[in-house]
Length: 640
Image (cartoon, rainbow, N blue to C red; front, side, top):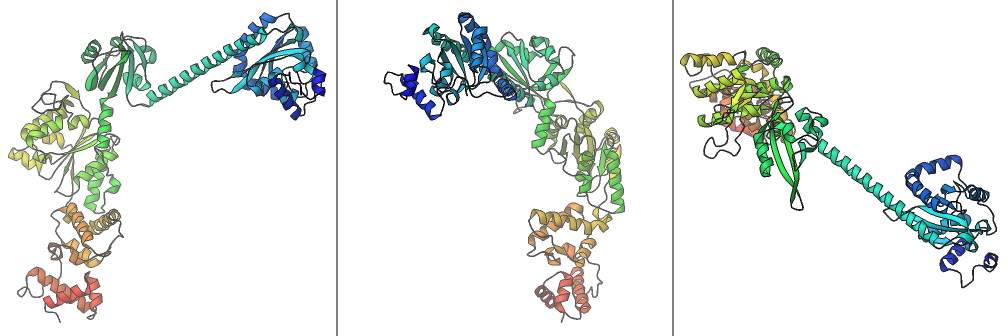
């Protein structure tokens, strides 16, 4: 019958449609129907590569293939596993059938796709994507006409073929149930694959969750309904300084203790951002944390709780970061070459190398706040908070709560949970107390106690909070005179006056004015997105002549005002206030005729006009004014 089909070109009407399609494909593939042996086989290296790729499929399939083989053992059948391209991966069978299979190259590494061998159960099942049984005469090549084969494709979870399971045996011993056995075994293989895939997916998801929780800044504890710790993250173990074995599987009350936490477990009420102290049972150490707890429910039943904690120190660091409680100025940003100023800067750098309290003294506007920031940024506390508070700018009644904080219910309107003061917020860093001389005697007593004990008690509270803060104080007063007058405590003065630094006024360092003017004008030009202005010698002369009661701050403000008013890239005399332009060192030619400042202006005009032989354009440029302004000034002062 097979030869008849071959000779007649598979035109028999009684041929199975699926077999007929396969024969037509085989003919298109130019497969030789009279071949008696397989014609394609992988090399040893190619086979090893393929077996490595299909390792998981082989490991899952082998036990089930052995079970299937045990049902047909001794009957001349072979059980084979192929990949999705028809290459044999494993062949199991009795010795005699294996020898027969070897003679036709039905062995591991051989290609039994339709393209290579024509119609056969393995290759046809792949292309038809369904189980199939091929009887002897239905095979396209003579090599397998004595066999009947039953095969079923193996699908993955995405419905892609990843292999084929096949049974081949004598055509006269085949049974219709053979294909059913193959299909059942394939279903078992697919189930195992899906189970492993699901397990791998769950393990991967657990790895993702593990890594995700480990990247969080919060410590996490998951407990079951009986209070046993199920899981913790790396941050939690670091906070508690305990290993995974010392926490997980233990009752939470045997790991950490806290009354409020115990109350939560009894009531199963959600807790949000509660500041508590946890005691670690093993070490008896206490840590201050921000505590959150939330019950976990499933189908209306409580099955456990999720606890998250954040160290108060980390919370405050985050608050300080976003609230700007950081020192931005370094010593490199502080400008000056004056000898007195450089000595002051040297003392500040020495102070930065130790933890001693610093007292910055000097007039308002001399840059005490900048020097304080420089000391902090040069010290070992540079990565910790820098918090500044103006003791003279806060009402006396509020200064205490600002410095020391307050407990919940300390006064009407007090925030729930209380409020941390500047000492707590600055823990580990520097607290800059500006205008310390304005602090009341009552507040001085409280401040002295904190400096002595390194502990803070919030107003209205009783809990003692240890603080590690370096103090830099600043004043524009003579504190010793204030001590003698009785308005400043002598014990606090001596506590603060460990590293005194006297900041020079600007009138004592006038040689720094050109440098400061250039620095400020460049900074302001960058901020205003303008070109740095030109400043002539006459303007610098006037600025150096001025007394600067407001010191460096006043200089900065006046330069900024001049740049805002300037219509071009030059800072001229007329852009500055009269109190500055009146401070010339010009000769007073006739003080009886004009007021002193006007006479100085008139003398300046005369000297410039004379200097440039009445070239009014050059004279105006020398004075830093326009020619039209020069003409107006000449008319005003009767200069011809």
